Length: 237
Image: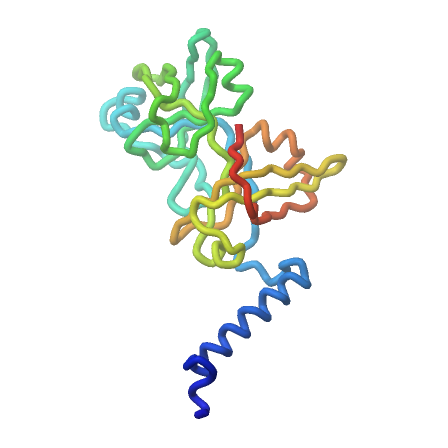
């Protein structure tokens, strides 16, 4: 047998790579998966907000209106705008000063928490952002006009944003499910079924809504941990 080939015709490099991968998996298991993370885990509360199309932005704020940056968000290229709108539900109850996030999108979307829906009288469906077909509508009121949405109001499904290095580290793919464990004073909470949302230039970040963050006492959390959900077909309702 030559030095360049081994059993069944595999090269020495192939065998070494397989052995290395197996050893790394055993090493991870023995240490509880404590290899250095490629990126720090950030868990953020995504408060109620609105995404506007350019057409609806101009209806609400005047012809030629552009979103003005108040604060950059954690994900590069996204920001909280200076503009806010009022969201009016079927009970004629209103949430004033709901923040608009930028940049503009192709379709307007309103993301609220469960308790917001109760207040407005809207039965909020749980959806991944952008999936608004067949969802309830509402009325948006701005300083220059009013928009009546036929659809677009959702409760955002809790999710985790990941880049390529994060996907490799956690052993998951876009669309997979993960669990989030939050340790806080007086309570430990596990949220199941977070959807993985992957992208090339995405930073590792979990998004929970206000109700979820408050229930887990997230602001006082001492530890947060992502865990791969091996066979979780659940959806957050």
